[in-house]
Image 1 (cartoon, rainbow, N blue to C red):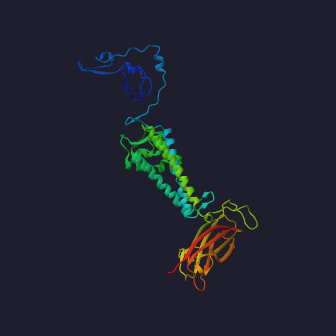
Image 2 (cartoon, one colour):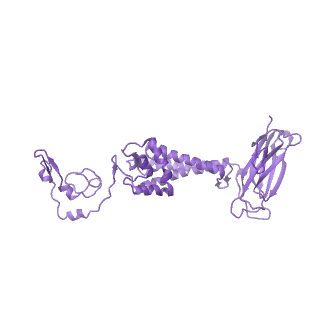
Image 3 (cartoon, helix red, strand yellow):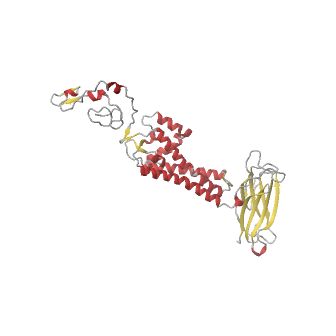
Length: 392
């Protein structure tokens, strides 16, 4: 006797399904059709079928209870697995989003260190640093979903919530189908997965657009407790590792390279601009010359002793027109030619957001050694640019 709700086989005469607990129809218990080989006719009653046990009649006191029993929602089956509930899939998607998004912290910090966006409390991303960070996160996002589902049938979130992606025939999804399914997340994910949710909601097998195109389905798996615990530990470890890595990167940045916030406004040190942004150097490039619109020519940080001039083009943000700017050229170590950290030149200006600083060759040429350029905004060191003079 089969349950009309979940399809499970039950003992003849059962009133309730042994798997899902649903009431078994009285009609299913007492009526049916059978073919009688001896007579060559079809019987519409189990009483006409020899060898088929007839269940005892159901007491009248039970019948009303059966007729009024609540209907349990059916869950279609795929390879003996029930389709995963929408709520479980939503929680799994949230967990996976956290695992992917947390990588912005170490990647963004690395980019900030590389392209000068480190702040006292973290980092800020602009231009190349922002493009690099979000490009790398996009690559990781695709690889995470594609490889985990293609090789294991589940991401960390799905493992925790006992979900698994299969083909419609119940076989493993494979890397090919996984790639198709996850590329279409670009559409399903619009509006915080609103598109995917609506498509799945009106699908009989709860398939989002990526599932329909790839021919896949998400089912509830029998993932063991050990696997779920391992997936949870792995997810937590990823989050912790990202924060620890970012902290170490930030701690390794020299203090002068960190964009420092300014103090309260005064007559000598103006505060931040009206927009509330912190004064900072957003671009600083060294070379042998520059164009009229402050594009560097011959970009390098290694110069020859006979280089006519050394130029630094720069751009700042977060300042008001009255904030003073200053450049200081320093010879850090040139041997016996000059004392350590000897100041070569200094220049101040104000009222501009971009420009160039330069220093010309001494009469006897540049001494071989290490140098640096310091840029001050409002009396505070905002940027250090090291360079060197080397023999040909």
